[in-house]
Length: 419
Image (cartoon, rainbow, N blue to C red):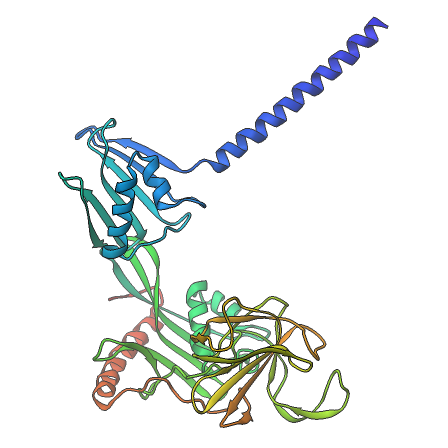
């Protein structure tokens, strides 16, 4: 009996020990996971103490400054100087870094360095009178022009073909946004089409930091070769233009949701999938899972945000005296989008769904021109920004130089152009 009790006690003790070990492990993991990344260094030559803090979720400027021993009045003055002289009013978790420098470990902070981007550094120094001043420094970058070209294979999407060609995901997203003014990526993509992209890569101290702008695009679309070139006008504004110098950015996009499959086209006669009888389908349906963000196809003012039996939740935008667009069957509206709201091109106005007379989640998209519905995939859309004669002449000269470089890079794709 006593042996049985000893065995029971030993089993019970083992369970307790294992339970405590698991609890301590969980606590240790939690402490490590929630600990802010802080690094302290001391210079052997100057005895200067440097503390680097990576901004974490929930951090505020005031909180971080006060943790380093700065007073409320310092925090207020620093926040004011940062906003007025550097345009910084918020910090970004896991992206921004702050360096605190002291003359010695037991001395107050004399200098603060904030790094809001790889190409910008903001330095705050405390004067003898205790006042703070701010200086912004742009970090020198070296930019290269990189060329990548590819071909659509049977069964490909443009995205897959672009990845295979070695085009970075972020650059591909920019190319989608630009070509969406001219193309429908579901209907206009065919095997055998060739494309190329010239884009920037940015370097600092010999190391690549990020990608820059798309400089040129060429795509052999069904309706002809689509070309776009990035060009700075005499007044300093930058835009994209076709091979003739005409504005490539249209006032409206043909396909608000990039790479969405067309499930029902514009037609004057279509058998309605719910009602069962034939009537006009005055827009284009794009397949999209519930919750897919819906961007505004162009800048304008919201003139309707409502529900009806046919469209379900819908938004209507007036872009100018000629064009309006309508977006139907939304699961919900975006916050802050109300009647009278001014929206920019690409701003999220709602989310795809299946409200109203609908057999599944999708976006129903309409373009109305002078009160009449037109086919979004074929209507000729006006450009936002064309070049005047003087700028067009400069553009055509610039295009010649650019195309000469593109020709060389297409023959030697591992080379680059130093910009």
